[in-house]
Picture (cartoon, rainbow, N blue to C red):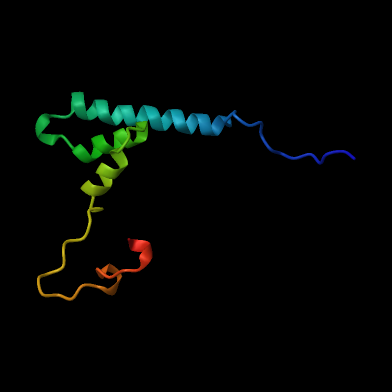
Length: 97
């Protein structure tokens, strides 16, 4: 019996397109950071662009900071006197303990 031919790539070696994309995004991230640090006037500094650049180069936590800055923050507490939802009841199931 012979094994069927497949068009799978060898493991551990990315395709040329993947390598090009990764290098481009990495250099683009550094470009955004350096642009904000060196070229932009201090009055026009944009922290969001700097965080996007940091996320592109893989800075840990940059994506979470960017989400919090662009509206991904938690919802506000419910007003006083409102009834708590059944999902957050203090007498929850045994799995909550």
